[in-house]
Image 1 (cartoon, rainbow, N blue to C red):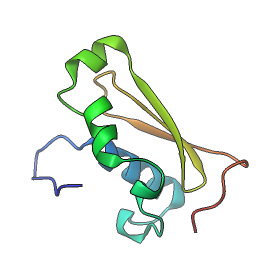
Image 2 (cartoon, helix red, strand yellow):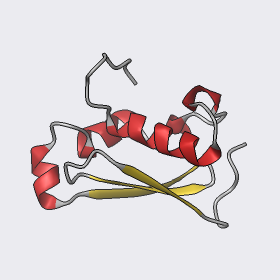
Image 3 (cartoon, rainbow, N blue to C red):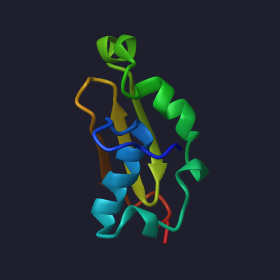
Image 4 (cartoon, rainbow, N blue to C red):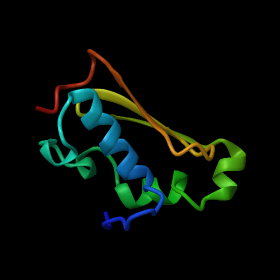
Length: 93
């Protein structure tokens, strides 16, 4: 994952990390399980990240388990990632 510049739209993978960290109440750098243990972050960014207008028009949605959450990222132009707690996923801590 590349570092983002000030004012740059966050990538889908950055949104996931930020959403999970917020749910955990920690800084994103404090997450102990790398995102790539759950999903290829580059592929996630390519599918639903900023600049993927075709995906946004088609409503592509990617759902996967990460850090004890079911994470859903939708390419709909809203730049959001949702992390929902689930008992069926092992805790990432």
